[in-house]
Length: 143
Image (cartoon, rainbow, N blue to C red; front, side):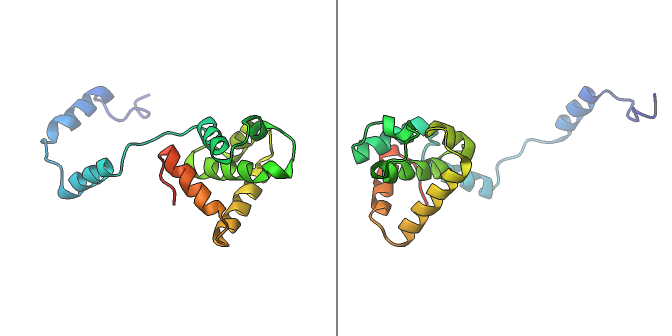
């Protein structure tokens, strides 16, 4: 049993001693600068998929039911693809989680939408301006 517990001093006492030995210190210039920069960077805004869907629906003037619909209506592809792109880039949700919120779509469909919107942005499609406006409306930062 002694072999499993080489330290004779309890763990809690070791931790207390560790903290007693360290004198208090002032933050370094780098730590201070990082803290100040994070304050200038703005508040940490947590967006949900529903928030993004609502903002995209308002921007494109489409009913919310088309975002969650499992139908593949081409007329509503662009708003849905835009919302999926924004969800992937502005939230920490996985592709399957995003797919469940968009009519139980497969994760490969989500990746396909993201890739197609990225191609449109690269080709200077007007969707880039729409994405910028929606992102500003949401108050988030977008690359």
